[in-house]
Image (tube, rainbow, N blue to C red; front, side):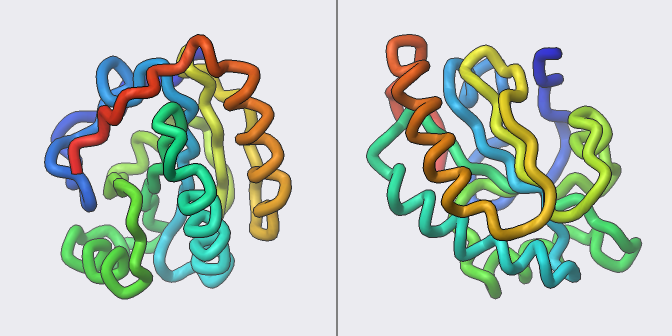
Length: 159
């Protein structure tokens, strides 16, 4: 199953325009962190993502993004999500999935969830919970080497 396009008219943080699988994420390995700022386990994942972003910063064929999918109504507002992105120093692009559309499109069931899509937009790994830094490190390294010739190595993310 290929990833559905990210829904339009959602608020994004850390990018100058909304990302799309048809353009910005095309032929990229995309790691999506499904999180919510009131979930302590979700917050425990952020240092792991920072480590991975630093390690793979020169691999333009790999993109990290967050999908803030609020568990509670009071977590949905863009101001609160922006404040959380700033407070926790999240560097990667984050979509505010306040209608849970991306969450449902990727059939997520728990927080945190980490999903990796291959260059054709097909999910190739799904993890739930925290503590997966080393698994993701190895998986991204292997996936990058495996897909290297199929990846778009240009910087297509509009920061």
